[in-house]
Image 1 (cartoon, rainbow, N blue to C red):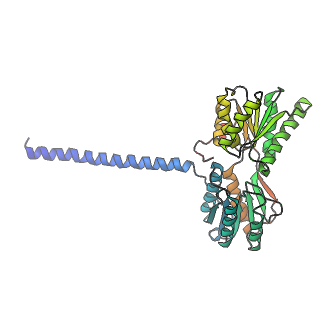
Image 2: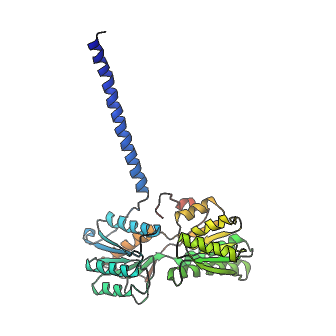
Image 3: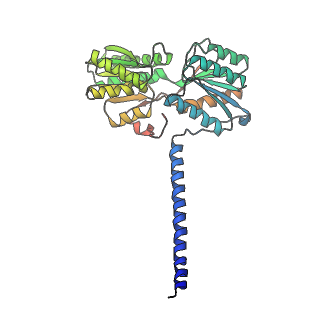
Length: 354
């Protein structure tokens, strides 16, 4: 074969191979990008369509979080954002940065922007009363979400999980599964005076005592100590380390929130007591807690406090109000739900923010 013909033949072979290789590379890159997008989308809350007589694209929703420095608050913000976007509404969002003065200023700014409805998660139940009255004077309905506010505030309804009922479910489960054995209880709380934590604690204790009366005919509520964690992993770790030194006979830990006890688990493991202590949480259904429930026997149960559902409900109720609905209860609860080993897999999403 002549050289010129050989070159021509090679070109005919090599060129298609190069094109094919390039195409494969482009497709592979596209698949990687699409895969990354799919993974990212798994962590995003999905909004739901809301019925409205008035054009939704004209509605401006304001939301102020006490902080965004926690997965729960991030998930709640994402749910509100996804729901407003899904329905073509405008969202003005603000972060109180864990500072009550900054949260007050942020809410005042939202009022100045002329939002049609204000969603507010108060850092302090008393300090935000003034801005709710300011909003009402401006004709802006206020919806309290997740947290609580003083009854003297001007607001339409509080949207939150049923902390009392959830706590009761967890307390009842504890008694049923401890089967009459002596309980030496350590209580891990968020921070002193918090109304949400207080209600969760009340629910836990009521659930324990009511189930003891039903099944045993007596109450034996042996709470050895209460410790505050400031709703943090580090706080839970430190509190549990101190408890295990002062009360080595503790065999039950009840807590107002998963976050209070996730750090405590490290201390329990380091002390070699995972076989000796049973953990029961009155809230929240955090993914790390659900994973422990699925994979271990020392984390017994937790109760659902869904930031996704609370966010969706808050936006929906605001739209209903703007459409003329006025018969709201002062508190609007999501449905109580206990998560145990039997149903944990149904609620576990490893890609969720919270």
